[in-house]
Length: 101
Image (cartoon, rainbow, N blue to C red; front, top):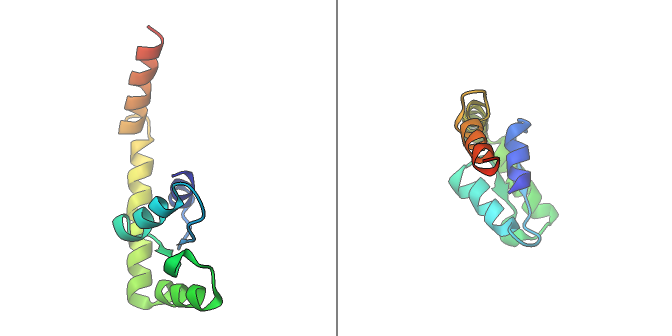
């Protein structure tokens, strides 16, 4: 899930995903339905109509605001987790300790 994490970490104001191979379908479902920070293309097919519909949804005052709000909240959680006393840092240090014993 590298691409979704990069999108959240770099504060894209919206994310549009097209599943291609491997775990991309899972990424789309996670981004669109779990995190609610982006949209997938209908049936994963890249068409002008599909992109236009997705863009209209993202730019819609209600839905677009919600997506950006969710994205900011997720980014804040990621930054907190990766901070000096965050859970990701603590878990990484624990792993490092286990591996260097």
